Length: 119
Image 1: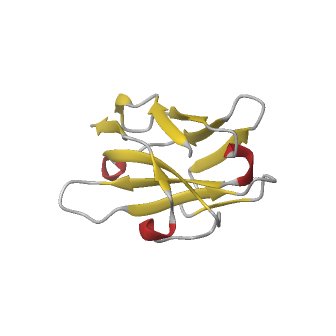
Image 2: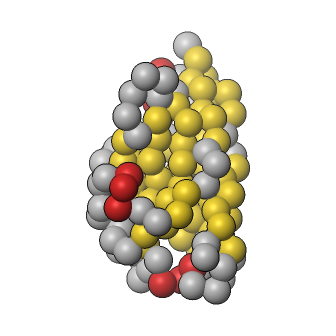
């Protein structure tokens, strides 16, 4: 079992930056790939970035960078140059593949953290 808790969301002006954190508990955390998804109202959950247990990563948003600190059991999402359309609930997820882009491919989810970008 892996429990995930996101934090770091909030209200930010367009052009600003935020860093989201996902704290994980569970002895098998280091063996899981981790990912960030986001979901805007009325939209499907969208893959943002993923990272393997060894640190290989992928991001579909060039302004966003995913990283992990295995010693702290924490995954981060650094978001720069935020746009209005980045407004969404951001979710952390754990699964077997870091490049899996479908939500159903992940086994564990956090509760989400709201990011709101204002003009």
